[in-house]
Length: 171
Picture (cartoon, rainbow, N blue to C red):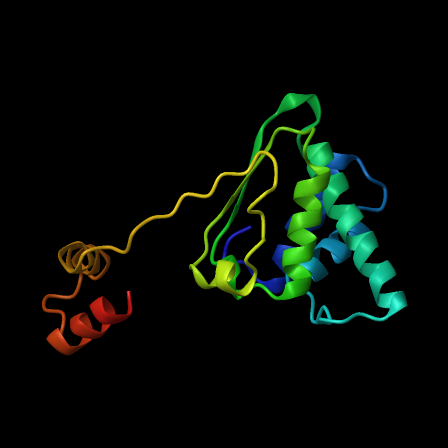
């Protein structure tokens, strides 16, 4: 699935991928549940779900767990990369932790990037979970940020100093 794919193509690729991996007859239903969890569905995941909503969320989490179990069947390792999880809502963080807790016996490496505020807002999130490691990277030095900006904006002959200064300040 590519960022440039249309909604229809994305849905088709997700359902086909699930069908190919799981041999599930209900790949479409599983795809719909997974779409909802990853924020692709128009339906929002409520922060404090009602009991029927909780059942639907549990079913969606079970679909994701089944998907990863099928994906890693036969010992094929999988890397799940999640960036900027500090933007995730509480329900999404709970789902991610549930996936982690049930994925202990499969070859799944979960790599999550976040800003420090995640641990300020959720101080115990994954801090004591077995099999987890937290790697804290120091902020880049201004010279390195300037180098990074130059590499990202290499097609621009001259990056305005005000823009560069703002990027360095907020990096």
